[in-house]
Length: 374
Figure 1 (cartoon, rainbow, N blue to C red):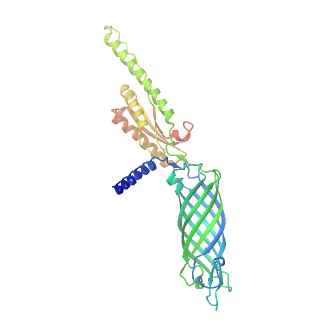
Figure 2 (cartoon, helix red, strand yellow):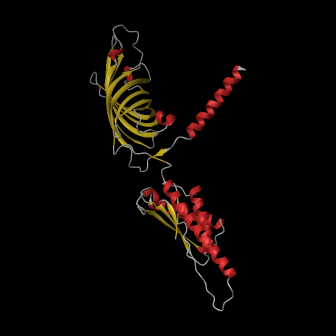
């Protein structure tokens, strides 16, 4: 019985965790120019070649060396990133190659690394720009350039390496982070004949500072449309439509009760209607707010069959290329056109056109992701 309760509890915990993860707000970088950073750090490195571990007179301090690093990278979103790093100075091992006893062999080196980064804190707990500390993991390939410094031997070795590690970041402000990094790496031996092993390992610990150009800039995916303003606009059109329908009903009633006269009087009723359907960035699918607008617009267009309406699609010029924005504006216009046809609007009442990317048509980039009925 107890085991069944434990299993049930674990299942419920998993469901709750999954639901919580799915309700986390997602953030993205609005422009490729945002969230580039540069960093500099320094620390120590030690080699893991164990051939001398049982020799008297040598300890870990004999193979610990300084290390400096320069990093340049980009945060793709609050979780994923990519960076390049150059690091090195020199490394040491203890070897007895060509000697009667063991001695320290020094090797100058520079490592080039290409790392993919994954922010565990933001992935598990959601993005919080005010979070003091975040923990990330990284891994990737690289190249080692090493040159011997003993016995006048200046041979240069170029080797492929691989590494992985952890990054801790203390958020000072939106521009500056204090970083602590631990990296473990392995490559074919940079010491060549002086090492008894085909490959060498190393562990390094670095501390430094990074600077994000322009500050970290992420916006929530849902922050595309001002929903309060959109709801107010929809309610305004609803009221206008209700008033127009009431006026039309009153006119029909008056006409039915009117005595026949020789002169026919025709009253034209000017009806206002919804004009705009907004879209999320890079999307052409219509959300629930847009469908309300389309249903209201369909009633008005069907009530005025002699009028021609233009279905004009637009995109945000600040995001994407010109050709992409042209195609996106046409897809958005086509989506609204098809929805109106589905609501019973005659195709002869509609004209379809896409205008591509438009800059600040309504004062904000996000309001340019729209289809307008005119």
